[in-house]
Length: 473
Image (cartoon, rainbow, N blue to C red; front, side, top):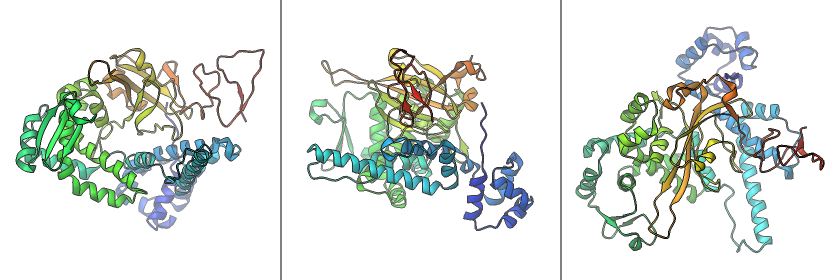
């Protein structure tokens, strides 16, 4: 299950960023310039001892040398070059990998150009159909840029964590059931009253703040965990404002829409950090072996909140298992995704129907597990279950969603859900793809679309397992 990780390009870029010659860097590491040259050209492995010395000598966080970012870039580039309208099918996988590893800035620029191209193409189609109404859009999708913003920072923000910890100390918030203390704190510290109201009075909203009367109005359909979360969010709009402003200013985002999305995401992050403080939550996660239901019960939060918080525990000095997370609806639309640990999502399409998150809808309320392997060999242990969002009353159906988290198979033994699994048994693995349009797996019974990068090869006399037969190459 181990996969070869080549660090030559990363080490060369690190050396160049520090303005070091090969001779000087080799001297600092205690190796010969010739050996360093071989390492930089991926002709010699990087030993653990050398990695540790590199981290200590040059003050490098070794996680920065992970190949996760390169693999994410490569996945995005595969989507770009698979687009048949670009006629770039001759760009092979090795070339894509080399570009992502050797020139990540250029790879990111290609992705940005492709986003702009797609939006221009969609705008032209809308104008042809009379749907444009004279409006043009930004060349960067705000939702996509916001997702990349959080991913590039491993979904961890120390400034927000510190602001949350300060509030916990100042307000003396008790663990598990802080509602009454938070309500009193909002009133005495910020003159904010909290009211629980019927949904009819909120015009369809579940949270509404009246600045004039300084009243936070929450819908009575919200469960207790959600009420606490929304109150913490409102307090964070005041107490975490400086930290959020500084992060957004430094990010230099492309549009006001993206800035708003990022601000909302950071204030949501603050609320989660208040209800699930970093150190206590990480300690509980380890002792409970990442049992999601137990964590939700102990901290008085919902299942989704417990999962999302697990995906943020990446403080450099004390990290949890790196989890990726995704949330989908019954139609398969991905409404939330957090990449981590080498798992990558399709930027411009749907997810793989073989991923267990989609199977969860067939077993509401049950926790399901799966070992999933991507075409590049990356293998993950996945946990999925359904979520039910409350309805506003009789006649309005509740919203049914499914959520999944996963980690690299090498860390699966730390999860209670992996007990009883033979993690080395390849027969237990389910082969998945990033999405049908990019997946090259043949004879997949759940394929919805043919792969973009290969020609169809249909024989009317033969019905195969898949609806689409194709020729590689």
